[in-house]
Image 1: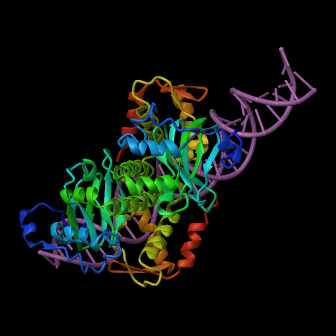
Image 2: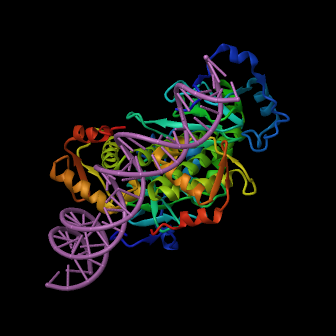
Image 3: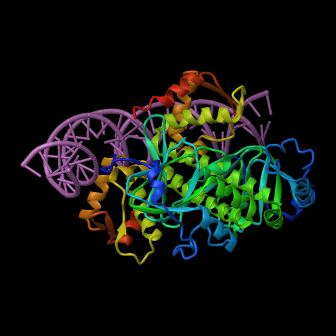
Length: 247
Length: 247
DNA sequence: CGAGGTTTTGAGCGAATTCAATTCCGGTGG
DNA sequence: CCACCGGAATTGAATTCGCTCAAAACCTCG
């Protein structure tokens, strides 16, 4: 577990401090869910959606619990975790600004993951009632959803590819490069708010394995790390690790 | 590779023998894509969709190629494969009767997988033009698509869970039980049209590993196998293998 | 400073792969 | 009908990779 104690998103007091979502001037509107949609729809969202901020380590919802709302992530990073009966768990997706998640309620389902913030986040909460309205009233909304879902499927398939076909070092190198791309290739210092254990949960490895490899790579100056930021010093070299599979 | 030589779905001659899809009385309509949809929509599909039959080993489409049509699988089994630069590949999904796949064209994308038949199949081909019409005209169609996509996401996440957290025997046992469930718990003999190598491609294991485990299980009479059919003799025992993880 | 969590490092073990060889099996042609 | 062929399945031996167990070093925060 993290050093941060788990908070629950359930206090009534939370609701009082929540602000209406500033949809009109939302800086990330172009990448967020409602980029492609009617002004009228945006207005409706504005009325019903609520923006909230949460610290690191907050459980936004739990696997198996009723799905009363979906979220749009504006700022920060969230992990979606799926648990196994046996006590282990798998991070199935890392969410960054602009991502939409938690809409299982649209199908009358409970949540399929546990969503936990890895950094302080700001997000918009979209109640089920709103989602239902949008789906029935604005066909562009369904299309947007469809696109999101397809992209999510794509990402998880890539993850399965990694898990099934690559060995430890390749997975780690591949992840670092992927993370770099996700934050723009020009970015120097990337946030990496994942513990070694969490990297393991994502890549199907044990803490010790992750630690060993990353410690060595730091010694070999393939990358450096400060606080929870990393900088790739030799992307070339990392790419070489990925490609070095004798398959 | 399989003993079946790869056929391509491209001959013009194929088109001549294709029949209009019998959507009205389609036996699997309730489970197929258009179960929940207007009569008018069904009619339109009837006009434009074409039913076709293909033998085992047919490549329906290739990863990276233009996505001109999607398919509904009526009978048979299809694998969706994703390739790695390094030459390896991962089966990301096994499709059975009623499944819908290959709709990447809806987003202007090329196909994200290679689709290969594992048995003789009958399927309906839905050209992009039809898909576009349906999406814009019938909101229920988008909803149905959404549901399909969500279920697919769910399955792939489960696969990632297997690949990331379980060891060889657990994955195999888990797969056999899952396959049993998929064909109805009461079914005695299940088709298993996957070679050992293909099971490995699905579960992230080498041929030899799969063969060793399955050969042992046959000796221990956990299941039996004839032609390409299997019968689970001790589902209890297999479940125990799955649960035996010390995690 | 001390406590609790995280990271690192070491040693030994077990699991799965690799390489290599043999057996099995269905189909083909003599 | 049977020998033969090619691909798939099986089995063995050696190796490598990642895991487990254990302990030490490191933070960070109270």
